[in-house]
Amino acid sequence: MSEQPSAIHSQWSSRFAFILAATGSAVGLGNIWKFPYITGENGGGAFVLIYLLCVLLLGAPIMISEIMIGRRGRQSPINAMLALSREAAANPGWRYLGWLGIAAGFLILAYYSVIAGWALDYVFKAFLGEFLDRDAGEIQSLYTHLMADPLTQIFWHSVFMAATLYIVMRGVNAGLEHAVRFLMPALFFIMLFLVGYAMTSGGYQQGLHFMFHPDFSKIGANAILTAMGHAFFTLSLGMGAIMVYGSYLPPHVSIAKTTFIIAGADTAVALLAGIAIFPLVFANQLQVGSGPGLIFQTLPLAFGEMTGGWLFGVLFFVLLFLAALTSSISLIEPAVAWLVENHGHDRYRASLHAGLACWLLGVGVAFSFNIWSQHKIFNKNLFELLDFLTANIMLPLGGLGIALFAGWFMRAEHSEEELELPPEQFRIWRALIRYVAPPAIILVFLHALGVMG
Ligand code: TRP
Image (cartoon, rainbow, N blue to C red):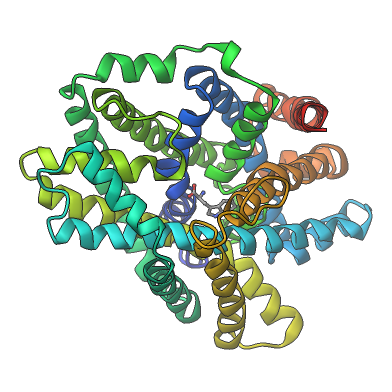
């Protein structure tokens, strides 16, 4: 998070600091781990197209709204919503949006931490040279062994959670900013490099075709819901994380411009990840729909074959771990802030309590890949259930609330004052947030219900 704008010259550095923090939150496992595997599961091109449309038409205007509410409210989400609903003479019940966000962040982090733990395990696999000269079957069995081993998963999950809590407790945000400053270019570089490798893999044309050739016959209501949910997930929207970051943004910084920088960087990383991974899938006759293990079964093959692959493998999984870490902080921050504000905890105790509860739920998630894999609710194991509930239900619901509040309850003069957009751009934002985002989210929900019910 940024320092408060005090000196005259801190303006630019604060805007930049905000962009770094928000990009750090947005770019994470969602881009590199989740986007490719859900694209694979949902048939490719048409899914990608719907996801991109959701980012542009729902994600961007809602991100603008969330940052705006944060900056105008100048407090943690619950209190910001309370203050702004007073200002708008609206029902103070809007603060429950903040509650929904706290719950969503908590539930996401429980499984996010387990997956980030896999990345840590792969740092060591890469370091020990376990990917060198392996065929697809051998790489696959490295993954299935990890899945069958709850203790190893719990160990790395614990390490990741401890790292997250350490940062949240100490509030070492300055260190974080420096980390993101080198992390994002490094991530970009290595993704580009992997794309370069993918071009030579023999499956490049097929991979591109899969990702960018829309075939709408492969898309059902659930795929649309997943694409929309992922737009929220990948941009860290709908739970107040970006709102918290926005509350540190100095006045007169263009919210719309920063939004496009953040959303653009986030989308670019996701697309690069897909372009790097799918050619490997086709070149090695793997399954596009192999689920959460997709990157762990494809990229190690590349690292095993390419020159310098040992180094790039270690580097990639370290970067993935760091990208997850800069995201996980924003997932637990709202819960910690709430414990501090409303329960009189100090930051240390608040982080410890929230973190322990989250860790425990994560242990259940680690079991859901092995000993509990047959325990299902609504035909989903614990991991799938948490993922579905948060990404596909809670985040879009939170986004809907934010859109309704910003579009229909906040006074137009107030949002105009915050956004400082040229009139025609303001009108576009306002039309999207009033007439496009809310009905679109509701329609996608209803459509999915109709099919599932
Ligand atoms: N956006 C992150 C990712 O793609 C995950 C994340 C961090 C998130 N903070 C969030 C998702 C808040 C939703 C809400 O990996």
